[in-house]
Image (cartoon, rainbow, N blue to C red; front, side, top):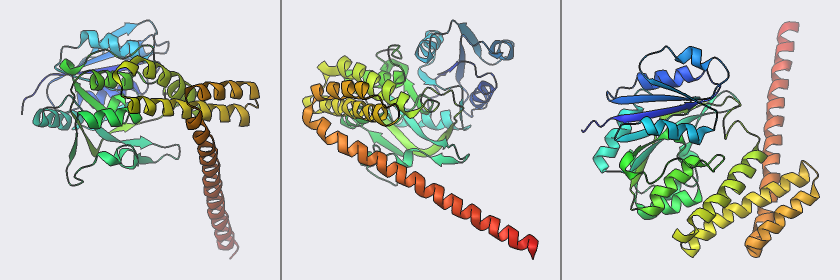
Amino acid sequence: MNTPLVSVIIPTYNRSKRVLKAIESVLSQTYPHIQLIVVDDGSDDDTKERLGNLEGFQYILQPHAGQAVARNTGLQYATGELIASLDSDDYWTADFVEKCVRAMERYELDFVFANWHQAHKSGEWRDFLSVDPYIAPFIKDASQTWHILNESDLRALYLEACPSPSSSLIMRKSSMVSQWNQLLNIGDDWCLYLDMILNKSCKAAFTFEMLWYKDIDGQNIYDGREWSEVVRLLLVEDTFEVMNKYRHLLTKHELSVLENRYINGLVELAKHKVLRERNLSAASSLLRQSFNIDLSATLIAIPKIIFSGFRNHLELFARKMKQQGSENILKYSWKRHITG
């Protein structure tokens, strides 16, 4: 197997206590040829004091400008044939790089991504990618470790969703046609992948083997935000930017996929404005935007999203009742035990 140099970029901001674990997970990789670049995005905690004198990686401090700018700063210093970006609150298993590079070289791919252990508020770790509904249609042979995605697969998948967070992926530097998009709030990595997929012939693969851990600490650009803010930033604002950026490269059907994503975001946000904020004026404005894109698609989205929200509330209520019932049984059993 060829052993190309892998340049790993870790952008970090005010995570002095967590970034060390991410760094250690890179330095302890079984793969021997790694260049590690840590970009401190203007942290005002003690990140500089903790990292400034450590060895084994390049430390770069820049004024605070956001995760996309930090990744692009790291890219300027990257000399590897392969590029990876690990978020500072995530960490890899020791064989993440080795297995990803092996797949890239064996199948001659532009990029690969791996499944992960997703932290949950309950404290448990969950298998994320195996239950992703967008991935399921692209599993051609369940017995394979790596599932190959051809050009048409990639277009269909990545216009529907982005199944590969930054920490999950290694890409070939020569395949990149852009940097991380600094105009996007959350989807800077999604836009980077779309630039490759829509502008050139591209081939990739993914594995359901869980090769990294995605933690949550309340500061994540996705998991650390309220759902309504994620809807506004990712499903509405970022999708609108992506829709307009690639309009000239899309078929009519492909454009409709992004339009439906945008419409669903507008309707979801309008529902929030009505139910949570009691702001009918803002909700009406959002729905007008949606009607202007596609009247029939909006009329379809409204009952679907209302029903989905109602179902989620019922499921949450059922879980709470089940949990409360279990707690009552334990209390009753303990009371009988101590009273004889």
